Image (tube, rainbow, N blue to C red):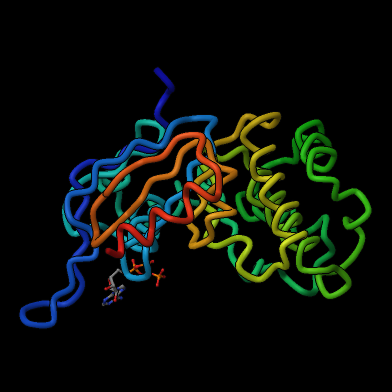
Length: 242
Ligand SMILES: Nc1ncnc2c1ncn2[C@@H]1O[C@H](COP(=O)(O)OP(=O)(O)OP(=O)(O)O)[C@@H](O)[C@H]1O
């Protein structure tokens, strides 16, 4: 059996109260396996962002628990949850979110600086080689293409050796060639770099790179696909939207 990196049990998320209440997650049980690339897909409004925010400790569920490498996030106070997020979780966003005044190198190293941790030179070099970002390290984000910026952002997410990296629509701003590069690198992050990655996406091509696709519909896990092609995956959300 694969080792669990993140385990969600009985997750519910309710926004608002009374007549305006929205049930974004309804009893979601989900285990994210270590070393895998997992895609979370589903129609707009199916609860993907709500699920990611609860799994990553960015938001608290209304009920249920989330554990990251055995630590129950839902039992932590705000400060400890922030520390755990900083130390154990990496993020990649659609908009890259790099700091414009810092070089590529300093952007990658920023999470270590914030945490007051030393740079593990060998790990830094492995990431730079695996992601092919050597030529971008001395440039600022404005001097890089979108795909190059996203590579820097992936390196920044990996530098702390997190338990899991969450990538929220990581190819949403990229053309198809740059998207393929970024997806290949996310896959490499799980393969040769041994990390665990969760991609939240609308894009069947992106999901086609995953070891496993979790399909959400109306706040519930509606199915799973393993080793599917993007063509197989493309028809699924349509079926779910029904
Ligand atoms: N802060 C909020 N307050 C009220 N309702 C919310 C809030 N955030 C999300 N919702 C509602 O919860 C449901 C799930 O939203 P969520 O953003 O998780 O879905 P999603 O699958 O990520 O959608 P999309 O693909 O459009 O980003 C939707 O009905 C949404 O309108």
